[in-house]
Image 1 (cartoon, helix red, strand yellow):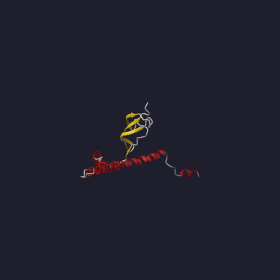
Image 2: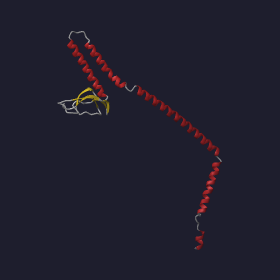
Image 3: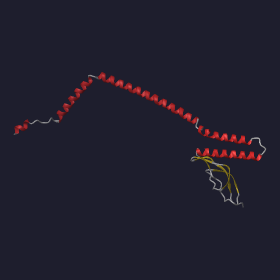
Image 4: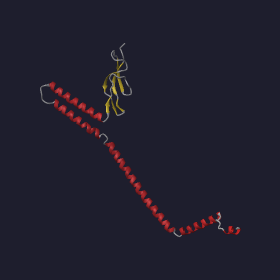
Length: 194
């Protein structure tokens, strides 16, 4: 039996495995070395294709930047177009009110009433247009003076209104969305006269 064990095939040692792998690698290298011109040509062709693709991409990006800049300039130039278009009916209404007030009639009171009616309708239309664009008037009269939204023009003593409350407005203030568009110019109560 000892002889049979000696005849059994044995696995190659680690050194022999490494030698076998090196032989396979060297054969592959020789095969690759026989085609170096073909690989270089392929690589050069691919490099040229990538270069062309990169140049086209760079040109496309440059054109995109120029187009975006033109569009931005156009948006800035015509930014107020929508609001101005909305204001035109207000101007038309004012023209109608003036025309109506200049009609030849001897009744001055009737002329004045029609003029006031036309101006009031125009004012309501303008306020509706401002509301559409999220512009809202500030309420100030009777409220506490707020220096962030109001500009005090003067203080007046008042026996009826406590100190630091707004008595009246000279100029109405407006808010655009969440920003103050224009502060209100107000008269503030100084409290009872002493």
